[in-house]
Amino acid sequence: QLGLVESGGGLVQSGGSLRLSCAASTSTLRMYPIGWFRQAPGKGREGVASINSGGESTEYTGSVKGRFTISRDNTKVYLQMNSLKPEDTATYFCAAGLRNFVLRNPLDSYEYEDWGQGTQVTVSS
Image 1 (cartoon, one colour):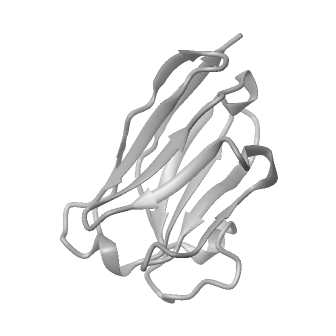
Image 2: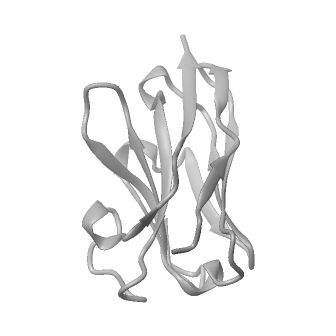
C-alpha cells in the first residue's frame, strides 16, 4: 500500500478554482496509474480523471473535460479544477492501480486497489 493522502480541497464559489494533490508515503507513486474519483452525498463513486504512470496519457469524464487537468511529477499527482460548478461538490479521492500498469478502463473504480481517505470540495452558487 502507498499510503495515499489527498489535500487541497475546500470551499470555493462557482467559477473558482482549486488544485488537489495526491501524495504517497512511499517513493513509488510514480510507478502507478492514478485516478481521481469523486462521490457526492447519496450518489455513487464517479471516475473524474486518470493518468498513466508515464504521465503522457490522460482521460476525463465528459462533465469535466476542458475544466479539469490531471498531471503528475515524481512525487505527486494533481487535479487542477477550474470553472467549478456546484455540481462538482463531492468528496474527491485519489487511487492507485497496483495490479496493472496499463488500465483497460481508467475511470472505473475496480481498476484501482489503493485509495486515499478523500478531500472535500464544496462549490457554492
